[in-house]
Amino acid sequence: MRTPKNTNKMTIHPLGFVSFFLRGFRVIGNVFTENDLRVEGIIQGNIKTIKKIIIGESGQVIGDIEGAEVVILGEVIGKVIGSKTIIVGSKGLLHGAAITDDLQVECGAEIDASIQKYNALIKEVNLELSPEIDMGKDEAKKAINPQDKELISKIAILN
Image (cartoon, rainbow, N blue to C red; front, top):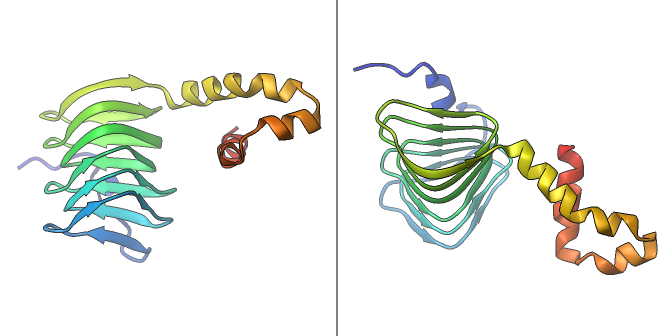
């Protein structure tokens, strides 16, 4: 059996905090965490973290995934955003979209997805917000939806 070059990216550091969804575990709903995450069960919903997400060989996700590093060894149906990297392992299946600046696909992986650069997405979002920035401060505050404030602050951090 061949060992992948990026094996260190397919594991989670044992001393950190990790959220696990083991085989046989099924979640219907969204998952948000500040920890690394490993999924060996089934999640029907969106997953979001600022750290690493590993979808193990027995893991299945039907929904969108967003994290710094996303490793797909199982099956994902949805949009995957990896701010640093997305890795699709040799037994991984990705159906939907991949948004990242570093996409690594191992031989044997199955991908049926659109691929977009992550930095291009950030620039596109900034362009959409530009008319509100041209307004006066009071007008801009009224025009911005409270739910969008979180998105705008994240965009500012990324730039």
